[in-house]
Amino acid sequence: MDTSVITPTRNLVGEEPQVETPIAFTAKAVEMVLNAMTQENLTGYGIRVGVVGGGCSGFQYSMDFENEQKDGDQVYEQGGVKVYLDPMSAMYLQGVTVDYVVGLQGAGFKFNNPNAKNTCGCGQSFTA
Image (cartoon, rainbow, N blue to C red; front, side, top):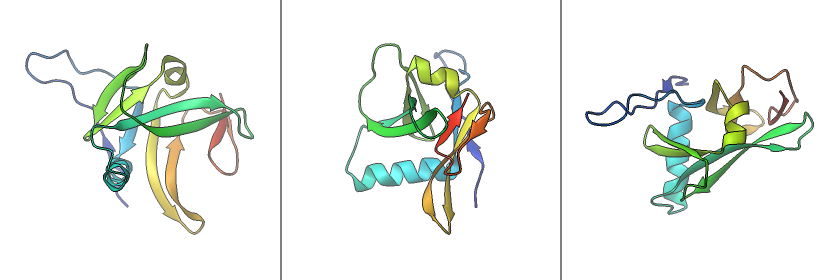
């Protein structure tokens, strides 16, 4: 399994210096996002990653397709995927790596959050 992390780049000549981003996607996660967008015919879309209240531990992760920036969003590109992140979610997602895993109970995106104090058994919710 390829768990290498795609590092966002913005260091092209004439552009702003490289920007530190709160979250990183593994190569496999980027591949699966791109595959899903192709299957759904979502040309020009990106992925909105966020944190919402709920779940058994207080917060849960969210991901959805997005095609436009909202006020206050951080927007960057990673491995060919445009990532949208709202300011509130950015606080909770600092240092998070998003991976795509396949296991006996199915396949899906996994959030590795070094700042989570507690997580639930399903891995989809956390306490900050």
